[in-house]
Amino acid sequence: MRKYYDNTDEYSEEEKYFYLLLYAPGLSDTVNEPIRGNTWLQKQMHVISLIKNELEYEFDKHYFGTFSPVLQIIQEQNLQSELIQQHTKKGPIWLTEKGLKAAKIFWNKITKTEKENIQPVKKFLNDMKYWELIAYSYSSFPETTINSEIRAEFQKTKIDSAISLFKKNKISLKKAASNADIQVEDFEKLLKEKNIPSYSLKKEDFEKSLKYIANTT
Image (cartoon, rainbow, N blue to C red; front, side, top):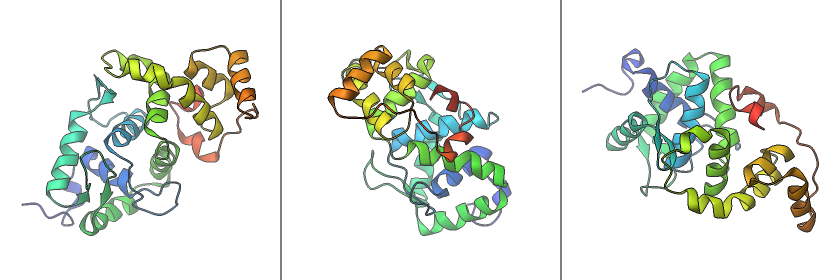
């Protein structure tokens, strides 16, 4: 049986990036900030796979949007090997002490550019609430929602999610109105009713690394 620390070259790129995402600092700026759950793991890795397009996660158009069976298998294997922890099936995911040792090796081997492609994704998406994450993902990648079974629920929450994302400076006024599926003028009226200023988004530095989705904001 392969030991987790013996030869990191034996790991596939997909396994390495699984460790790298979990190890990467998030908004707390501390390593091993937990991924909030399975959906967050899938959505974050989907964005990373667009940036590093040679990763073979094979994302499908699933009933929750993008979904990678390969990523799910890697997650389950690492749970069984006790390299990650997840106390409930849908709860937060983080590295154990053993997993942290392996992930640190991977992290120290990659370039600054690679780190700058991973950490911003975690910072940007990991603090979103569930329906905020769904709204952002569905709006940014509408082609992935073909088989969605939660579209009806999403329709009920999309306006509130768009307002919340706008308040968090995650998306611009124009993007928020698009997420809510209403005209910008109507979205501005909603903001005024809620005493939310309709200022223009000033992008955080970390958003600039989101090469494939920054232009959607």
